[in-house]
Length: 305
Image (cartoon, rainbow, N blue to C red; front, side, top):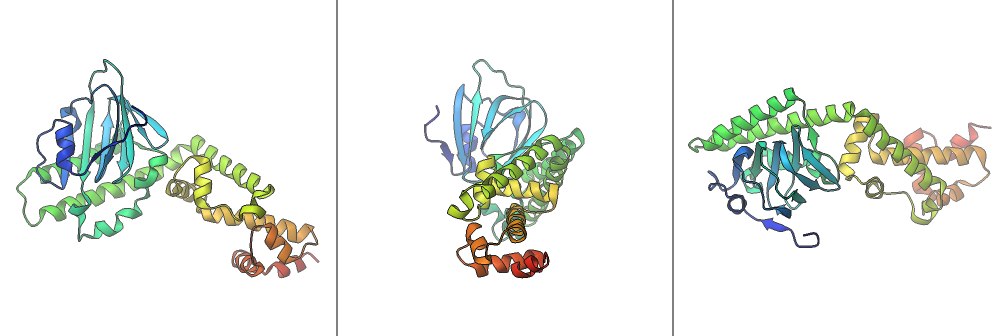
């Protein structure tokens, strides 16, 4: 029930027991065929895993609440969960099971002393808990399923000194494809994404035109993301694809736009403008302004005389 503590799984073996699955072939990695998994008990179950979960699901007759979003799995959908993230599964009374797909569980210790252990954090979609799963086309789903099958085949073979390297290489390939498909998703889901861009512009305009700037200083990326109900990494990744700029760059652009307006239309001093824009020291404002425009605030103002 809502309000209860999530059920935490520290080991992949514990998760297998909970889902009534055979013991994993390896304690630190598991590939699960979801067609073999029994449906969870009716009601709601909140779960926290101490390991990575990458799932490709179809026809999952339940709802998963992941961050702020709720997902139905009628189509091929992937989502990526980092250790420590909470997700909730809601099963309707009398629901029947007809799910298919794969779930890959990887304990961080499996990646110990590999290059992927250091680069895994670059895949920002593991932090998309406040926003979205990856919606796959049939062709994309076939590509991902093929990689999952390669990992499964290696996972179930006799373990030798090459096994970890082969699995890690396949896992990295899967993550690279997912990055490509997310990039495609940002572009193809234009209506939703441009609505997000419009909301960002409205939010920044309201912040810079109101009293918040002088009172609180520049808005942080975290503040903007919270107001838009997405994670900071998701927002910056989306903006990079749509505009080529990060959230921080959008904030600075709005600041420079506001500064140019005041420098060209008012008689306020640079210090007064800096203070009104939330800077405690005019030198910090002048340095940022010059880095963005190649002119000092005074040089910019003089260009209008």
